[in-house]
Length: 322
Image (cartoon, rainbow, N blue to C red; front, side):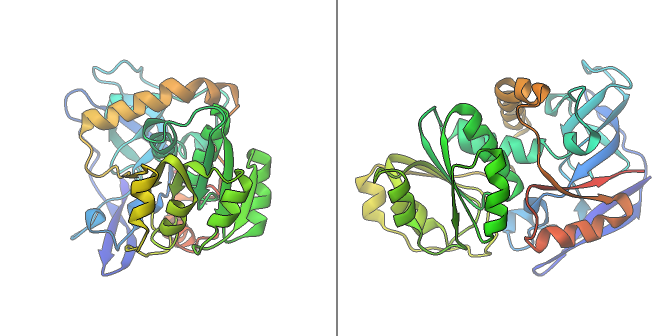
């Protein structure tokens, strides 16, 4: 079969198609014929030490497809599943059933293949660690990204008000259709006064930072008392920031980092169950649908990776298999 591998040379990530053997799922796992997989920025970030791929590694972290061999899993042969698994950007993948769920009947392969990595991360930011409740103000820095759109949708579904930032006014306008309450055109920088004005001076209860170091000082300034600042990404490639410790202390702020890398299989399964338990019904009903920017063919996967790195997308980029 053909599988893509991720190689990193310095700050450059490359996708390489390789002829490999069919996966041999270990006991308890199942074999899935992959129909669609997404390109996630976190999986191709070459500057992050925890994401290093010295010598190469199987590419892709989530997708959707048909069960070929269910093994001892609760799924059936031929059943449509969406899943998280290393090496998802391939024709076949070995999948832990604890990290898989049935695809809603109304959902396309492209939609199903774009959900889990972004939405589980968004769920961790908004629900698990953000503890967002109805009436809260949620600030999403980098709201047009895949995780940003997911965080927006889940926060709105929970009853929160959402402020989003993006470097593109057009992207913010498009996201109004998904419920974005206030859009701020910003690429990092200090937009705290705009957030404070929008919230009547109270600040954001939760700030989801997908931008990086340039946005962190503003997230601190814009936070409400007892606010939670969730650090998810580094689109700006800025890994360091100076921020006001007095504000963090005086307002009893919490600063929390989210990364899938250090999680154990049990912890990943717990996050999967949390997201599915809270939002599967919304996916099934169509109340929440992933926003897909562009679909590439399997042969175009390197071009899909390059497109994600341009930061032009809004939502997710998906690769479909033959």
